[in-house]
Image 1: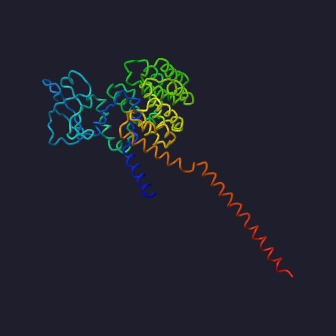
Image 2: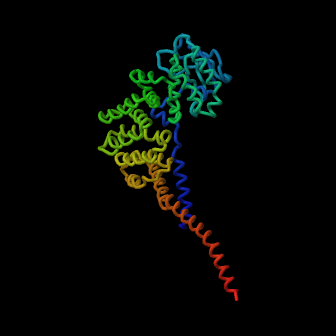
Image 3: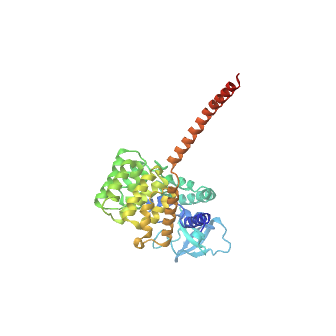
Length: 399
């Protein structure tokens, strides 16, 4: 194969492999903040073809009858329907209680279906009306959605408060970092002592890391230090993310020493550390990418099965220094990687080799400086040489 054709082959192959790598999900913060991937009632409202108020048939639990249309057209849709899966569990929706429901093909469903959005109390109904008004704007500017709900985190209405928590927790981490003070810091501290709110503790931990208070730094760093001793991993990703946010110069060396470079740790702990590092490399302290890359080197030594996830970050960050760590993992049949993951690693290694084969930036700068000095000397020397030549020519014409 000629050099030109070989180069074209590698470009096409690398392009095909990169297509296999999914884009960076906005849910990186969700993986830290949410207990499980959660669908928000707002998702139903924004994707719905029809939004209504309905009441349950007193004699038939979960059979609802449409009483009011809030958005959309009900043509051809039965006014009575069975709600198979209520949003909140319970023995019944409540006799003759008004509920807000939506009808649509959520998430690309082949057939539209009904979903319960929430109870039609006065506060929640007003919120639903505002959500429907903001539908087009939020589709164009998704970041405004989480910002809007950040002001409802402490609302007196439990339904609204729950929706707000889901919406804010699903926001990208770089947006969560802008929500300083949306909940009072004393309330965050007390909420972290309330085990009934444990599902939302990761979100509270990240919000608390924005306080700038010494007592909160002591709490956050103390939790990570304690976890390193006890081996507990509950909310470890959130505590580590928060410590890196507040004190990266101490957090990263500690994590390397206690978790990554020492004796093997439990995979759940390492995965939590990885998630925190990835969040910061992608949407937090991006200036730490080189240090995070070195942390990944330690992770790959003991947990090669995480190579595919690490490579996605490394390629996005254009950090090409781990090819020697990744090559044996790619070639090892016992690494537990599927073919797609091996192709991703191979693409990374090829790109890293191509870059290392070219001049590093320092050498290019040296060559440019040398060229500049050469041109400068030439510009100085040429006029002097020309004057000397003319002087000698005049001397030669003298009698």
